[in-house]
Length: 244
Image (tube, rainbow, N blue to C red; front, side, top):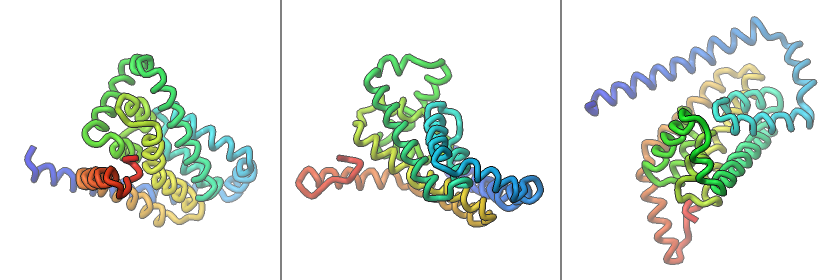
């Protein structure tokens, strides 16, 4: 495929994606909230789920999302934002997400051969695809980026990264950085939807996708910069966090 055709496809895909997001946030969600969800129903729901028990349930749902592989994390985080607001839902979801992923990584590394052979053939194939993508460049950076990419099921990431040379501390940092912005934005979207700020939610999601696109397109330059800093660190000038 020529560069011109590839660029045209990227432009068309981007335009289509923005169009879908606009449809969701400027028509679908406002219609649902205005026609089918009453304020009384929302207040009743919130009063029954907004306590400590609800926060523990949110943490459990986030952990289940990681372990299940296929449940989209955005759904859990948006729901958390709806019920608890941005800050509380972000803290709970992020800690649960990072903790569960690190636990899965640690257990899978301890039983690496068993983890590689476990699961269905389809699951092993998906894990291999994620592994190939992570190994396409610096594994630490790519594993961080994998948690941000909407097309990669994040539940496969620890099983894939365990088959690289990424250490547990570096995986912890990559998971923390890769999920920080995404979870914060999804929780903020839930909170904004609750307030009826659908336009703000649209631009939050659009901004997060723009950030992902920018990181992906500049990944090689960023990795070269990190490697340069790492070499400088070996001479006593300090290391970048992902290279420690």
